[in-house]
Image (cartoon, rainbow, N blue to C red; front, side):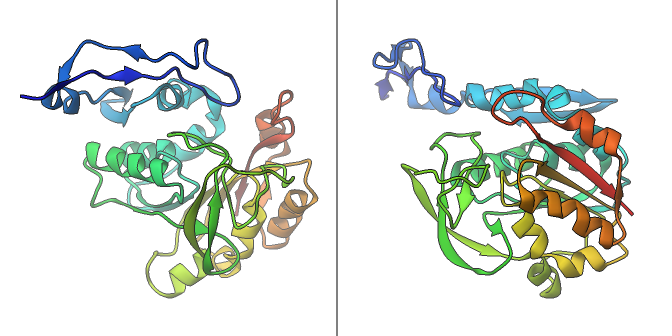
Length: 281
């Protein structure tokens, strides 16, 4: 039986270097079978419903630990869903809100996450929660056009974010070089619905770290459909393109609470001025 040692490299996340970046930590020798059985996960509960998330690293564990505090407005929004309704989750990452909505509210979810590692873990979470008949996920970027390009990564790290499709920019739409870029395809939500791939949604969540305006430009027909009840979109109020989102959605008959938006806005740090806006008909 083969035996090997697992090396744990010090974790580095969001620009914070590990204490000893050059020296890995060795765990006791494990057989391959023992290593394969290592499947760290965390369980959260809503009423009598258990929701399980795989947590293979500290970034994904942080996402679970902060589920109710990072974006409480998203959790509150999801609690208004009814069984059988449809959510489109654009920028699903590893599936925190996709899984939560499907498991606790009984909705059907179409999830979109173009980053390869996040997509793999998203599907692991789908299967782990027995949601394969209720959630469909695509490793695709949604935008304002269909085509092939590159997904420029902020970092090659499971659970990471702030990746951009087609342009080497950051979430502020400022020039940023990427050490790793992944081949990727984009399409529009309008095209997916018109072709019958995705059913018309009751709810849309958009969190793509800067290109929210492009996603919305690619779903004008969906936005005009009276079936759509609500949209939750992360808006960077420092960007003209994002401020226009508010005007455009109001013209389409949506309203939003200025108090909710103000409460959600981050008031300090790198993401100052960024926050979720919940629009309703």
